[in-house]
Image (cartoon, rainbow, N blue to C red; front, side, top):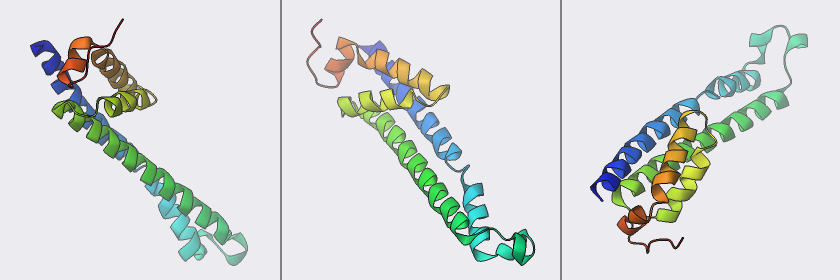
Length: 136
């Protein structure tokens, strides 16, 4: 049981780290957001009037960049919350689903997700969460 508690503690710490990395990587589209805002607010920056990009293209970049940033930050917050749930041993199903979702983000999320799935699959860990041990 002590080994399971130690592994859950380490996994929760790694969830915080991966959540921070996801939040940082979600900031990459800020460049596209700024470029789109420049296309909309000051198109003369790109050259004479005949070379200015159309405004709808700028709005398209702003909308998509904003959506990607928002989705990345939400996902990062969910990964951090899963780490908090692992630490408190609550919401087993949520932790398991977030471990599966984390597998998509290579390489760190994949490693974290696989190890989390392996640890959560143990009957002794299920008992730590207050669930009955899974039948074989």
